Image (tube, rainbow, N blue to C red; front, side):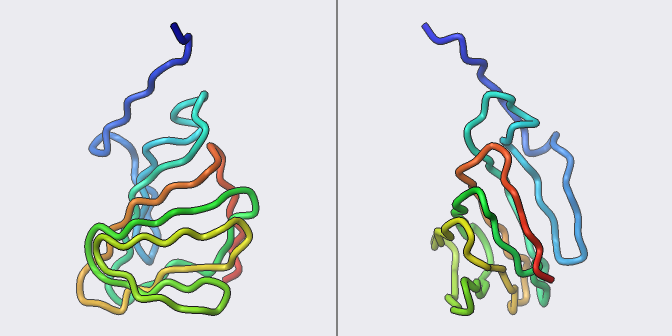
Length: 122
């Protein structure tokens, strides 16, 4: 039998981090679950907005689009994403999400580290 502690988080009860471009709610990371081995959150980007160009030096990111449509950059390339599509961004790759649509884009974001590092380029 494992001695690992199970952590349950409720999206309705976690505090949102808000920005001019949208917001993030973290569901799992080392602060919420000290024994976690990854980071998980829900992010939204408002219509006509984008999150800053950035990269994660210590982890891979997987982004799954739940609602809305967006364009996602990775090292200068672009891909159009719609609901049900996922993008895997390796550590160190510069990327960001642009919402050119009329409705918010909502995504699940997952990182391969419990303490994701982010380097902002904008």
